[in-house]
Image 1 (cartoon, rainbow, N blue to C red):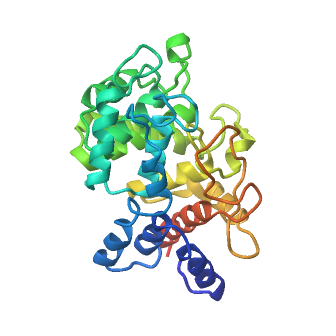
Image 2 (cartoon, rainbow, N blue to C red):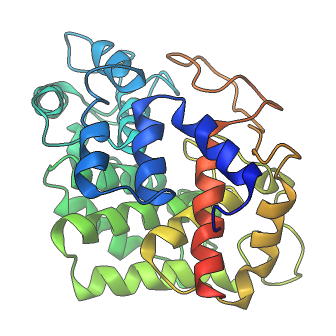
Length: 311
């Protein structure tokens, strides 16, 4: 979306009056500031604000919340995922120290596997691939496992080991984000890229929210925009993934894009919706129904990507 109206500019000012993790992404994705300006703002994430607060909560055992996956929203996996979403510089000294502690100490509750060796569920392993790739860890074995576990319809499902043969949007989006991050970090093999594109097509064939068989909306919660999404899928998360791939949006996204536009408030901002219950480290938005900087940032850059392709 072009920032041409007074409303858009007011919203951008509101976004910039925020944490460094929001500010640098606004500068990069919306206002298109010079690279050195963006980098300077991004470097602040580890020093102050939400990123610094999360880093300070790491325990002496190298974990957050005392576990790899649990407690559900304050665990090591979920905290690292937040830091990745914030754009914390993986090369900073603070991050390097934190990641050594995770690598050497954090074990999965499933069977005591080392954190970056992954677990058994594709939704978890997709996030491990994203985190390992982003933070410079070796996760090739996890990538290889995910490629073997892709289902015939193109996606993934954590219930496959219990007999499911149909993919899950939740599992698939976690794997797609992981494989994309792996491509960015390592280049990715032709096999991994092909698998990601098949999984991407799984979402597109279903117009991001509908059953292929009947055309019904699979889950109305997917039309509500959460943050953080954790392991859950919703339409905005799916669209933001597609935007980050650089793919040219086609007509199968029309309904999903219209939904994003519909969710915009009269003040030009997007609300937080459908927050998942459970303990968190701290709040980064004001609660459901209130304007959300994270949702507004993501929605504006998705619409900008879509509009750019349809000029």
